Image (cartoon, rainbow, N blue to C red; front, side):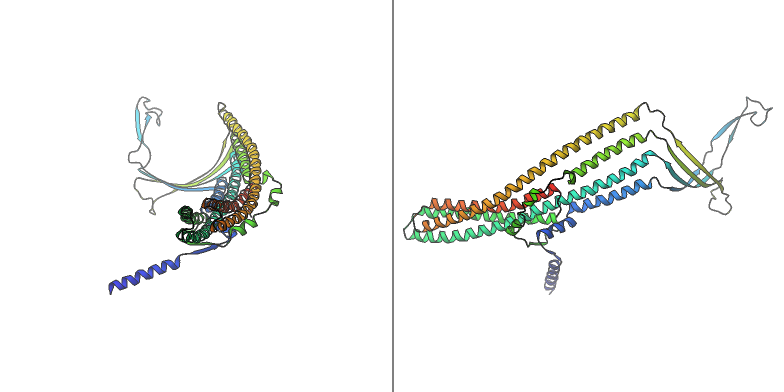
Length: 448
């Protein structure tokens, strides 16, 4: 009875675990939208923006009023002794005589509050500008991450569809070849053909079975890779609603190649521009250190003294003090050290400007390559589609000739291999259209 109860308990727990497992069904656009929200890299990229906003406020707050309070206690268990001459208090005293006195009390305590305010500091003004640039950098980085995530999802989605279509074709080829092999074996048993024809078909069938098993494993890997990119658990269920051929047709957009390319719209260009701005601000920061700085402090507090620790009793006397201070710091001479730092930042700025020029040229080349690759993939798609149709007709003719004994097994096998190669080329051409259009859209900066 106990064993039965334990079995039922485990069964209930197993059923509960199955019920909590999530299931997802995505079109390509739905997968992209989900990834932009839940992809691990996209999530952290969004957190970078939040951190930059906090950093911006931290910089702003450093120039606003600051209030600090403190409580200081000292136990003077051995008072410091001071030496006085004999005539220190008595003009008629012996100046050669030394008298020692101990000043102070055994216990002392200070309760204080300080209000400080920065009035002027050139580096603070530059820091405020830098905090805005810092935030803009991470906002641009988030856009770049979203573009990369979008391209990654398109490629992962396409790889899954490729594996599924490949499995369907291989299973179809296997079914057809099984029937042909069976008919050939019967013909061989009747002594109408040679055994070599049967063996040749078995070799081809073995190759198809091997490819089928490998593609099934590849499908599982492709699904898991897509799940990771989507930001969902590997154990959860995922199904795709788009079909490879329909997706390919929707990506046949030659108007995209005719659109003008503006390098300034590229995220990489924006990041490089931001880098130049950072270097410019660094140079301003070093120059601002030649300017004076002005600050003010308001102090308010109480002192208490005693030879007994009675600070928190009603008999203890506290003595108030307060003061207002203004501090002016004027840099005068640093042995040209500050000037050397300014020159260093100037060199760094020139390097950043050169990198910006390089980035501009590289982005133009990247666009040209992406455009050329996409145009080629479209050409290859139509060419592969036509070649597949031709290979299917040739294979059917050779199959009829082989069945009727008008062609050899080598000729039939060669036609089969040609068909299988055409099938793979056609599937790959469809995936290439999808992935290379995604690369072109990334180069342009298109997000949808």
